[in-house]
Amino acid sequence: MTTGVKAMIFAAGVGERMRPLTDSMPKPLLRVGGMPLIEYHLRALAAADVREVVINVSHLAQQIMEFCGDGGRWGLSIAYSTEETPLETAGGILQALPLLGGAPFIIANGDVWCDFDFARLVRRPLRPRELARLVMVDNPPQHPLGDFVLDAEGWVRVRPQKTSGYTYAGIGLYSPEIVAGLQPGKLPLRPLMDRAIADGRLGGEYHDGQWEDVGTPQRLADLDAMLSGN
Image (cartoon, rainbow, N blue to C red; front, side):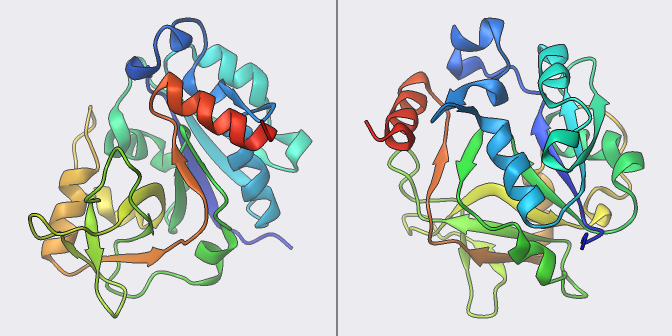
């Protein structure tokens, strides 16, 4: 049974910190444990009965499109939102909205690896006030204080200075309303998150499993070793 919930994978970035690896290959196609990063997301979305996926592409776009194809081998239907130059996260969502439709959709950064069960986002719709529900994880060594804190009711709050919180996993359930009124162009999500926090409209949930931000060649090698059992 399909859920009707669509998903978007961010895969348009240049991957500056991963150079020279990303000079000839887009970051989501870098392999860990014998599989491209993006394929972990595609398999996990299919396992959660998500069937329609939008992938935004820009840097070395053709490689991603050739690898993922129409999504049929994973039981998915994949559409592509092509960006002449990377539009960042909010800009990418805004351009892809005609493909995503008017209902809340799942977002996943193509350069993270996580054992999160996307069905958790499918089973629990956004609350009436929520513009988005972010998946939060424990802070990695390179980001020891985290991004935000979560209150007892599952609302994301500003992290007080010198206080540790949680790190945003790059995964969440988003309402199209979060980009309402924006003009097309290169736009990050963080200012929209901050505004939603100020309005009491940003939710969150904690994931206590494994998560890795594959931001450097060394972290890529470490994750590959872990998944390969080396």
